[in-house]
Image (cartoon, rainbow, N blue to C red; front, side):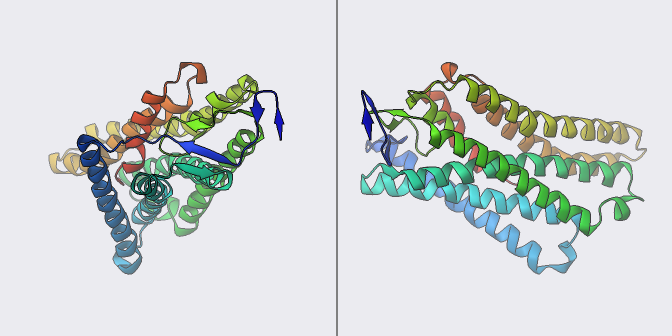
Length: 284
């Protein structure tokens, strides 16, 4: 169906991130290598925690879920990117594009809430160790994980429904290596300002609220560390939390940069550069 210069087409063209120059070929091989390391690392983490009964604790259960989300996230993006590069076919159907958007947004959102749950877990373990078995029982952990998955999925359904309801110009080239809402909005010939405002509100809920929980949790953890009389106890608590904090900082900065700015301020180069590193964030 076509009207003027508008067209509805089930096919988009991903311009990708690499060309076939020697430098980009090396970078492509490097990305595949990182993908394989991340794939094997996350798979091993999930399998070991599942098989070793000594690791069936709240902390490791949450960690296994984070590894599972990371595993699904890289598998949503990298295989399609590699296929496009090796085959020279950069087209992606509307269904495949919608599938990528759904899984990418839902997994990002679920990880946001799961990282907050992990911060709360560390707060209880360090600040209230005697209460830990009561406050962090198996049912509560399962509830937190299920809530993270549900909230992430609800956010992605909203984003996907809005993105696929827009009309697009005849040029359907996406300046990205996978389908993302930030890459689709510039192609729309529909006024997306209302959607951008709603997207910002969703980002406040999905990003700012978990960040607030993380900041409050680790503020109490730092206070508890300062009151610890033993230097060994302080080092142990710091080691436990430092890896989590580093991943949280990298992850949330990238997500806020991508989704909490107006579409008019986005550039394709910035979005591609930032999103290229987000899926490979290691588990805490």
